[in-house]
Length: 174
Image (cartoon, rainbow, N blue to C red; front, side, top):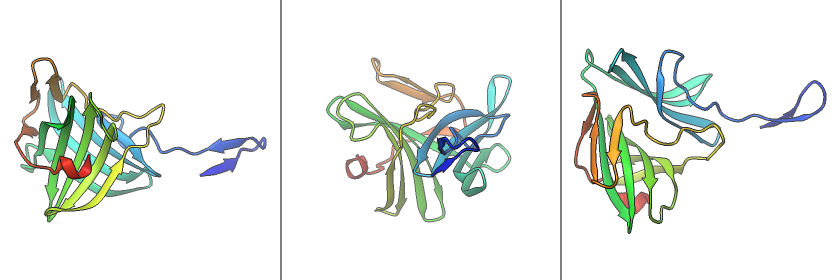
């Protein structure tokens, strides 16, 4: 949304860089139009004690999913080929009948660099690419998801993010 400042100059309102709270580290965050999706980590010294997904804007969070030791919720992760030379890092969770999937594509011929897909069973109900901005953080933090493209090895640094093989229909969303 564009507006005018008090001195008459045009200003552009952009979504915030993340919906993470002051005591959280941004794991992934990007703008989807006027909304933002963020994956945030709350840590104690060297271990992650909570991962939170938020979607919405600072005034209204529409989707919230929290994984911690007490509630037993977990995020899932995977790295899979998408096209010749391209790999897609994926982090997702299931909420009722929906699977909410964050993606980051690296190398090769990626249709988009990062995005959000929502599935209801095998039907894609949302497939949005991140709107790249100067302040976006549309890549997964190495503090949580480690990936060595040369060795093609990947893993998680937290039991709140479990590596799992899954068919997240990358051929459909990428």
